[in-house]
Structure formats: structure tokens, C-alpha cells
Image (cartoon, rainbow, N blue to C red; front, side):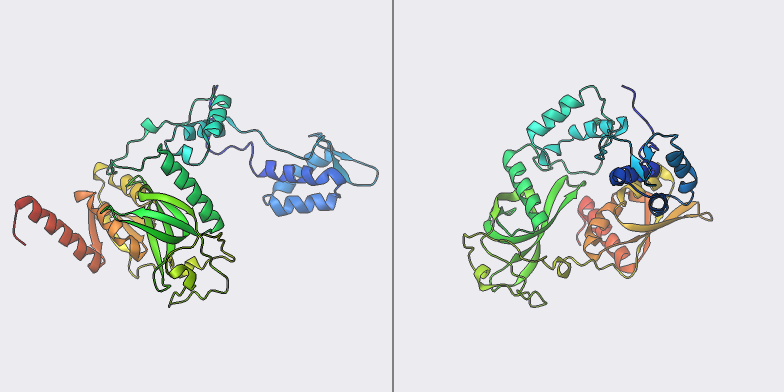
Length: 359
């Protein structure tokens, strides 16, 4: 089957959406003024000029003008579900080849989709991509325990249901934690999922926490309850019930948890300033590597290079240090001074390790 190579198709664009909405509401009849208002509200500036004559004249044969002066849909049903384009089906087929897809859909659903898309070639394959500087010990996405834990945590994030998690640290110490899940975070560099949440420690103090999913042994809905009357402030107190060991009763958060108090983004005052040379496709690699951060990039004609300013959250500084260093001589750090000092220190330490030089 021929694949549509146009990423953005006009088939299901603005005009389709406007006409679809009109037909859905025209079952009981719409006046000309109501239709004109809908086109004006949802379409482009000149949409009325193109759409209205074709609708009112009957050229498209979609609407019927009756004696009461209203326009009615000629369609037998107002449930207008559109078919997928070839491009969408090819993209969906490509997703089915991703090793992480079974975290989100059941094997039965995957099998049914593969059967339906049997004749559709995937838009891309995992082998079409080469990831460099990525960890080789990624998460075990095919392990049943990992899949079960992932789905339960994802559902808890959506409903903000507290969780009781048995966690094993890197030193094989096992602890049970009470965690209010915030969201799942994926690192393409480490090929790992992490759970961001808030945990309650002894004494009833709250603390934000990050847990590697692969180190989570068991997870289940927690017994303790966060109440909307619970005071969440700088002292971060929590009901006595959860300060010690967890009890086994049902638990649900009664109101949205104030995660913003723990995961508030604090942008650094000064952006990281990088000078990017044209060697080794440096600009494209940098844009890809730092895609998730706010940045400004401009061409420095005098020095025939690019200058990129990256605005970042303070907690991402270590990650940015590692990524900047991975570019070697292609990237030069111009500032700020504190970031440049850390870069020099890391390079100096690496030199000492390579030359056995005493610090």
C-alpha cells in the first residue's frame, strides 16, 4: 500500500473539522446565521468565503434547506468518526515495533492491532535510529514484574492514588515507602523510567523522591490517606497515620495534591552559553541533544559559528554538564562562570585519572 509522505495532510485539516462540527449539530436544524457564526469561530479569516457557498448551494450535497428556513444534515448519522490516513496507520504500525509498547497496551490489543495493520509497512523501524552515548543497562521492558508495576504506577499517577512501594537501593537495602506519585519520567540517555513523587518520612515530613522503576520490587495502593484538610506547607507535616509503618486500608487522595510545592521549576538566572562549531554536524547534534530545554540559537557571522543560550532548571545542571562534555571540542562553554568552573574541574579530574597525576 502506498504511504502518504506528507506529514501534514489537508484531508483532515481546519475545513474538515469545521464542516464536521456543523454536520454534527445540524441534525436538529441550524439557521444560516448559526452556521456562519460557527465558520467564523472555528475557521480561518477567509473560510466563510470558501465554505459557505458550497454548503448553502448544495454543491457538496451535505445539507438540506427545508421550509422552516433551517439547514439539516443529509447524513444518516451525526456520529462522524473519520478513518485513519495511511500515514497515521504507518505511524501506529511503527509504534508496535517499539520495545516499550507493551507497557501501555495488553498483548491481546497488540495482536489485534498487528492483524489489522498487517498490510501496512511501518513508518520507521527501531533499527533506523542509532543512539550514541546511551546506557547499555536500560530497563527490562519485557519483564512481567516491571510491566505490572509500570501500569499500576501510571494509573496511580493519573488518579493521584498513594502507593506503598518496596524498593531496593543500589546497595541491596530494601525499604518500604509511602509515595504519592506525581509523574513518570523517561530518560532516553539512560533508557530508564523513573517515578517522581512525594514520600512521607518518619515524623510526618514530606520530601520529593525519585525512584528507578527497575528497582521497585512491589507496588500496591497504600493504606494511608491524604486529606484536603491536611496542611501542606514548608513544615511538610502529614497525618500521624503515615508517619510510621503503613496500615492496610483503602486510600484515596481527596483533593489535588500540591505537587507544585515540591516540583516547582526554578530557572537559573543566567543561561548556559555555548559556542558551537560547524564540525561533525555540531549544530544538528546540539539541537537534538538539548531539545527538551528552552534555548536561543543564532549564527555568529564574524566567527563562523553558532551561539546557543540554554535556559535550564537548577536540578538539571549535572545532566547538562555531562551532555556538554560529551561533545568534546565541537562545543566551547562561554558562561556562566560557575558552570564553566565545573566544566574545567571535570576535565581536570579526567586528565588526572588518565595520567595518574596526584591531585
